[in-house]
Length: 175
Image (cartoon, rainbow, N blue to C red; front, side, top):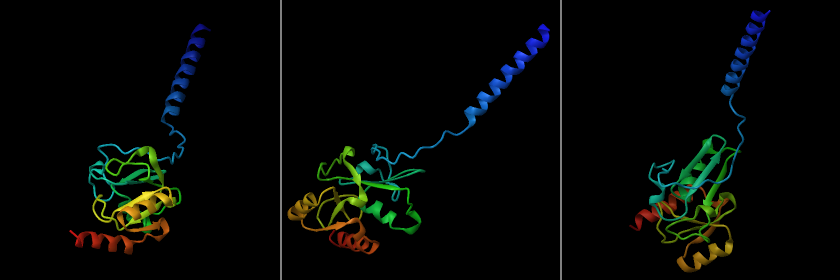
């Protein structure tokens, strides 16, 4: 009887170990965290591969269930997003609020929803390659930059590839 008992206990213990090991192999239920994430010194731009923190001005990021894509400028992010194959319903787009950040060191504590932001195009401010789109959470802050630097205020829906290419061509012809 004692041998039967030991065999049963060993079998049960082995079964429990197998069940625990099998449970460890099961993927955890993924939960979508669509909050903005901080930029790190080693982050590279998803489009151009340049180190993001090497440039002044606002940056952009796209947060999706599959991960985060970071961009060295708002224009790079929007240009990437405007390509139909990159638009996903579950994605969240973020840009720096330059009304609450210094131009040369945007503060990641002030990342805002890119679709709700106000953008200023056509200033002489320096940023990453191509067009510089300064992003703001308020119209008043965007208007203040226009009064100081020139340019015009745009909403996210008003920015298209033609504008990005036109602005980029102007920036390159002025150098």
